[in-house]
Image (cartoon, rainbow, N blue to C red; front, side, top):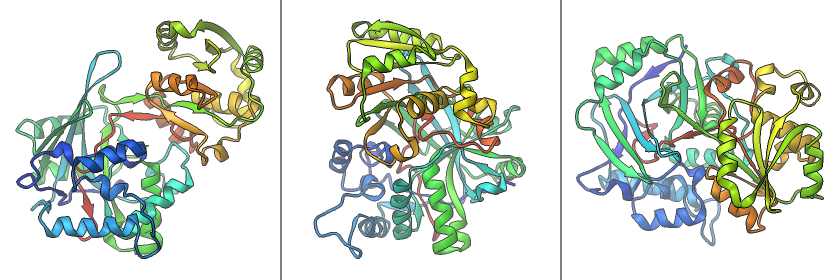
Length: 428
């Protein structure tokens, strides 16, 4: 069963911190060095100083970015910069945003505490592999701070809209928090009505949760609780929970941009790909048509490639049976996913890239913006970019139910929940 409970969150004191935009940040794993510097400059109280502190000369076991995060967290609480809510609640969380196609989107979920469950229990299910060095970083931070400071996203099924209706009813008054950050409006309401909280707990008792984003943070929390704490306080983790049946839930693709591929030859690759794919060639100058055609084929085994030679390629798999030899005994839903075809057939078989090993290196980047991926290849910093259509929510659910792990960053749930809206400290 899913054990959900409300909590008294720690939040920025808006009497002292007037400009919330200056203190919140994206999740740590999407922050680059330049953005880290910018967030540092925004405010001495920006949450990035806790979730992604800077390494300094002379750092060692007793003084480093993790110990400094712990000290800052304690200082901000002592100074009243961060204050704890007086009563337990779940937090309705709405995000309003624009997409590249100009349409506006809105999704409404909630933040609550959920008891950690090992994956083998079949209650909370993953869908992606993780990168080990990222897990170690998060574990060091948790050991130092004894808190959840960033949200993970989990999805659940509520076809009747029971939770969606209650959340909408709880989000009609002025929000406790409203902040616009990088084009997305984030709003938070506290829901503490005992009857509503009981309804939520009973509703989730026999549900399954699917980790949509934050696999590293979840596995870190499991390890921390099992090996380093073991108390009831660390047995729960703060989650942003979304109804996968709601139309507003948005998944974007994470495009792959790679370098350091041994013996890479763009023309030879094109010839080899033509054995397995129908190849449509579009000039680099007509990238607008390229992406329009890519979008039109989003339900097929269909994706794009650019290797900096003046042409862009749309690739459609000729025969799904070829996946039998490269994807083994994995279930059909898994073998038909675009990201699996790309990884198994093109990267592993044709280019000889061991993805699990390669993902631990810095020879690839995951990019949400298509134009940025093109620019990285044009600049000669990277050799090739692969453009994917979004993995669908039903595919995520089926892969997780089958116990299959998709490659890292197979999904990009958008918008990301901000860090710094609500914190869960284990000394609640």
